[in-house]
Length: 291
Length: 280
Image (cartoon, each protein chain N blue to C red):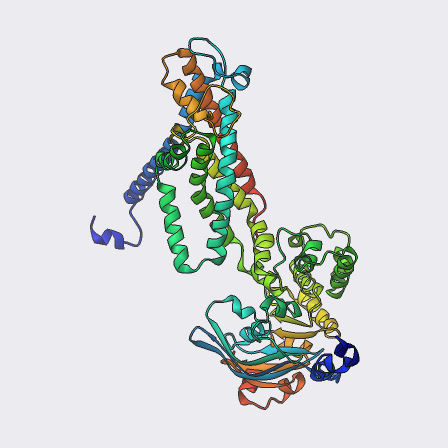
């Protein structure tokens, strides 16, 4: 294209037509890309429902897995196990993550913060199986047993950097003027932070925690050699415990059709759990704005 | 020990200390703030040069001057709010009723309990109700006495001329009020901790004329019980509601006089140029 066609004050009719076409094509391509992003979600949901819905009955939620060869049974222990593991993960990840985030937002110097943020970002990028191996070496080998504790610790450690960064971000969103208003009342700094700033940022912090929980809820790799999994109720946290992803994994690689169907159902339950969490997060973050 | 019972007078507090409370005197123009040779730096930039000023008790003192003249910095130095910014440094002395506010060991929070502040933009805490906003300073400073809290709640809201408007919905969020009401809520919040002084940093600059008029009216009420220092961009406002006015320029106190004198016959040509609207 020659330079003077750019310089013309008004494009010719044919140029205008061409531009309209280019515009339409590019818009269509972008729309298609957006659609492509959404298709996997619908495909996943479609297959999970097609394959898993038939195995999803009352027994699935209430019964233990049946011994090899017997048809029926459920994943009650795995569902409870996942909730127990998430509880332990939250007990570790939430306080450490939130306090770390508060430190980053309110106390840390520029230099230290850079180091902490960089470390957290690297930790966020570590493959989850590495967390499993680390906790295996830290807790499983010394105590000579797989345990619910080890699984909870692995998931909890994964949560720490995620919760920390989101906490920091939402704390920094709280306007400085609230901190100043508190200081001007002669209130101690730590009280301003806990009662005023954290309370203002609470919705965002809860959102961050839920997102982190949803992410670790589906993790299998860190549980493989920590929580290990089993086929019965766990009454002791220092023994192996089952979890939905683990049960799905062991059923999916088994040779039995019935177990395959149950694996699909388990995946469907896990997927719904994460979907619901995300909906709750959306509802929370849609509430009244922060200022 | 026997000495204690026989010589109670010598073992009591030092005579100088016993006399101290009476010494500031109860004359009408007793100084609240006594500032001398006060300078302040942000890092290497000097924001205040050698300010010496006495601010009278139970008077409204206005601080005027063009943007960047150091008037807000000076106001924030009066309750050590500038310390929020890292890298600030000061020199000189700043006393409130004879007590050095920068004395080592004196907690800035303690200073701010005695020297309250209202900001340019109203900032009620968004998670708190009207009631909680007013009482937060007391509650977080450890006051639990319900009767006292109730009394301060009503007293502060009455003092800030907001009581009649909010008394029936004290549990609504503070941010549900209008802009002018929010600013009066912030004044009530500052008054609830019963400070000696109220600093106001351009409290009306975000308000419409009607809301501004209400705040100015309120300032006239406040001077009966408090010492008020107000920074304002608006010279008419300074003329309307202050007893004395200080003009700052380039970090220096240029002139300080009774408001009427400063606006009608300023001694300094720079002051005259500013108040007559020739610059700034």
